[in-house]
Length: 188
Figure 1: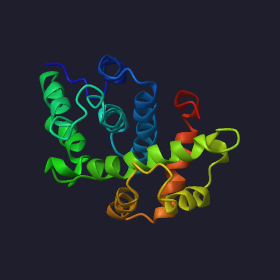
Figure 2: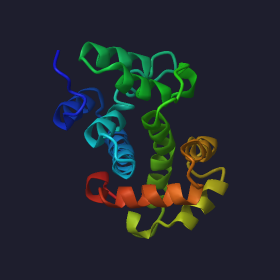
Figure 3: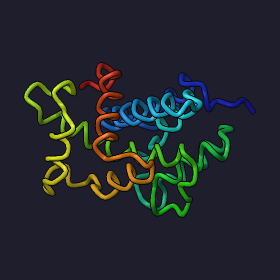
């Protein structure tokens, strides 16, 4: 079976087959942006890491329950020939999956997932809704506001940076800058 783990066009088509929501597509692109830049920083396999991030929630719209997501997605990816490391990185981003975050890729995906969503939310409340207006201090200030983007786990954001061994402010800054590189696709 052909290995599609480094084929962005294949992965993008798969994402769009299962995900119709513009917000979820943009979330996938935002997480991909952050993970891609970390792959470059760590001198890792950039296309592979990027596609793991791109597909981490591809099954969520069709299978949104904790019983199904990301397990159904992992089954679909297995059928399509994606390797165990690819699937395990995705499975591990859900704390309830029982799959440990024991690789740098898995830790990076987890660290970028909630933060990318939170940075997007912060961008939407800026005067011009532009990521160019987002700073670390504004993200940190909004993190303290429990009512703002309340579905985003602050604990996951904090633990994600900690598990990577990176200061939280440095991680936030890194992800803001990664998302700026892709702001047109992200609509930010």
